[in-house]
Image (cartoon, rainbow, N blue to C red; front, side, top):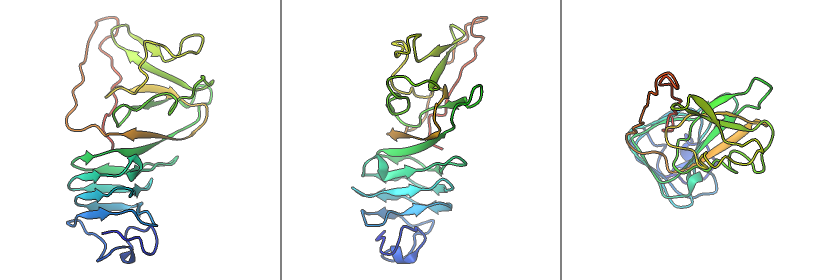
Amino acid sequence: YWTGTENNIFTNPANWRLDVPQANDPVHIFKTLNTPFINEDYYLLNVFIHPGATLIFGPQAKVRIDGHIFNESDPEGLWLQADENSGAMMINDGITGNATFEYYASAFNGKHGWQLLSAPVNDQPIIPEFFAEPAIAGNNLFKWNEPEGQWINSRLEDLTWNPEFETEFGMGIGYLASFETGGIRQFKGYPYPGQFEYLLTNSGETGNGWHLIGNPFPS
């Protein structure tokens, strides 16, 4: 198990009671002075994050977990980081518990800076975590309405929140967004488990069957 005796480098043998876990070894992370950090390609088996502990995957991490992740800590217990160039990637058979997934949003600049996003967790509030209240110029969020064949703005003309727009990101819904200032935003919560079904409509000439669907799973 992780002792973090020397530093935060996951592959340092001095940080483990016995030795650095290999692909077929279960991993136990306990709360220590140094938080384990992976920022490279790595293979793991089942991962157990114990209360108060944290495991961080850096922006360059590409981690394959041939098993399950059990996070008994808070959302920061399993933390996938991002920067302006990349974001941590993780493949696994399932996550029990909360997690934090970072998203780098570039700043809006005139016609440039629009981006598509979706939430990889349940019940992620849109405001004020992603979009501040009161409204800030340059912060925009839209979703596509196929039956009406138009974009729905999250704000009314007076910049108050549109009561017809959800206050939490919807499962599998893609959004068109822009941000006044660039930087890291965080999704925190329970990752979507299992399969996902999305009802597709085709309203003929109005929406022509076009939808903006988001990936509901952490990548």
